[in-house]
Amino acid sequence: QVQLVESGGGLVQAGGSLRLSCAASGRAFSTYNMGWFRQAPGKEREFVAAISWSGVTTSYADSVKGRFTISRDNAKNTMYLQMNSLKPEDTAVYYCGRAAGTTPAGPWGQGTRVTVSS
Image (cartoon, rainbow, N blue to C red):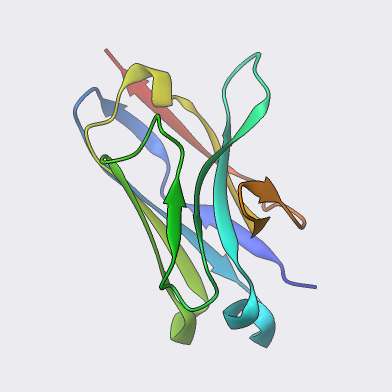
């Protein structure tokens, strides 16, 4: 079972950027489709972005398309989320996990909090 640790969150002003990382344990990481999900206060957890095991195929929620970029480095067992042009509505705890399309398919890490001030 892969174990995941998210990092890179913080407080940023609107329009700023952050880069989240998801470090995975285990050799199987490179065989998993992975994704980023987020949960804002008082809301359900939602899909943000996904990437295929090879990194060739990516998908994004409409709300982040054109601003966020998902990537992975299988040699480092790490996935990333580059977030640009951040908006206050991006404020949430961000989680990484295995993904089946836009649906979570495995356990989460502890999450990393992103706060965007206006």
